[in-house]
Amino acid sequence: MLVRLVSLLLLALSVATAGLLPVSPACTDHDRLLPVDRTHALDARSVPRTLVPLAAFDVPVLGNRNLQLDYGAALAYTQMIKVARADGVQIIAVSGYRSFDEQRYTFYRWTQWETEQAAAAGETIDEQTAIARANRYSALPGHSEHQLGTALDVSTPEIADELIADLVQTAAGRWLLAHAHQYGWVISYPPGKEALTGFNAEPWHIRYVGVQVASELAGLRYLDMQSNVTVGGYLAGRPLPVCSAATPKPRPAVTQTPRTWPDRFGD
Image 1 (cartoon, one colour):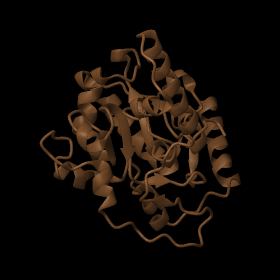
Image 2 (cartoon, helix red, strand yellow):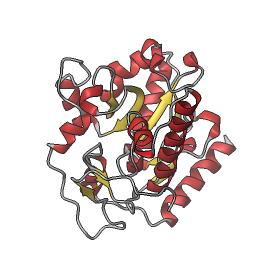
Image 3 (cartoon, helix red, strand yellow):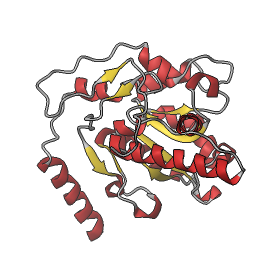
């Protein structure tokens, strides 16, 4: 009980001292609904307004990692996990907020892995080929929803807390497919929609967009393979709430132009 109290006090202190609150509801909704996909990118300087440690909300976090999430998303996730737990379903958070630079490193690491895998198979590939292969499952920096602070990768002990496609065969995966939208969460890259999203299926990747928008997407049956609706496409066609300029942090910038990877990594 004491540990829990201390965690909450530290959470409140971190939010207050960072100057993150208050933030207008319009700006919160604006940031939450930004389209981020292959053709919509966040600026390298874009940082969520209200990042908090998810572990302070008394929800399972893999390895007690210092996983951060937007405050509103963290509250909604906590509510969802409590209901899932009451239904006998175990869901664990694996990865949350990732900065532009962290995504840059992550993507570079995957391109290196692709190069090594090709070499092990007796194949020599150039940098552009490695980038194209890695980009099937990893986003270029600026194009990752994790930079929003409202996306999570989740798993379950049913599959040893791994991020694998078998999640959809578990009780946790089925529960998320059926109920996530009721708490404002959507699955950005569902199975069978690879040609539309541009990414391999990631049933473990969920994004908080709020109950209204999540319910709208569910009503459009966005998870169905026969549907042409995707999370990114739907958000791109939906007007954003107007965010006042007089807010603590500048709102993230979005560009319609896809980013190209620089000639050299790590610069």
